[in-house]
Length: 179
Length: 179
Image (cartoon, rainbow over all chains, first blue to last red; front, side, top):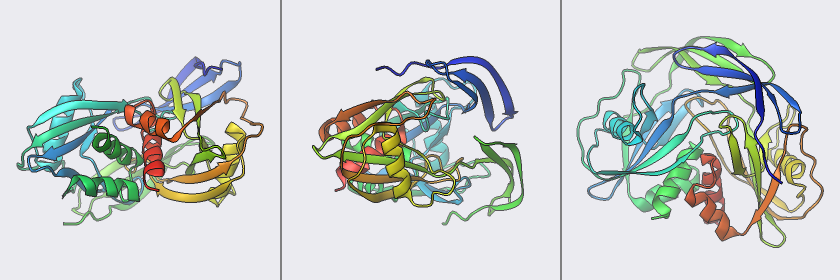
């Protein structure tokens, strides 16, 4: 048994602006069942950074997240800017803007999806080893607390449910467990 | 330093139907910076099941996911139906519909968020131990392949990036590592 793709007969954009692009597809499954409208969210790719300082600490950020309406302890990162095509460039930029940490050696780890049923984009994990501290430069609407933890604390935070973002819990466990 | 919530001055729904609810909030951060519109996606809560058969195998499902436009190997699960308020009921229903497996002992593991910046809902992980095989009853638009793997294989799938859904990779590693 396979899981063949759907065919798309027509697409419209019922909601489209700078911050969100919602596509509505008129689809047919491989078995010929019509699925319409099927909504797909088109965001730029997301990039998050598992950064380890020169003294071996993991760099996390705590910030208010308005979707869930609560504070969230996460990996630094964000969306790829227009014109950015290298995830390592986005990773280094977001890490520095949000936390001030910079430099070190950056490597791509894995590219997954936050929600393959609804999101068209990818979320990339970048590992940064040996980053050094510097001044942060957050956006005007960002209030970001930098939280440094050691490797075992980071794993326990992910396993315990203290990392609210399920993808980030996964990224922490993938990045810290599989080396 | 804290990460205080934003205040919402006004909310509208620029896209609202059976399958999607997009809320647009006119917000102010604690520092008084206006953020408008800020889009929030209101879905019912999601429930996913880490099910272990009576012979100790983990029950995964492979299905086409139209958001990303690719096949995805995932934990069984779905959205809570209207009127469902018990995540164990949703877990048992989705597991049986998608895979045919049923019974066993169900326990909640952790409740996280797929995307706390954009999603208002929660995603719940339920552990099911000792489930038995039966006939599946998928929806008309679902073509689901059941994939049984052992515990170590499941962990390796999550660590390797073969589980495309980052939250599900996290759930597998949380559910299988922290016992």
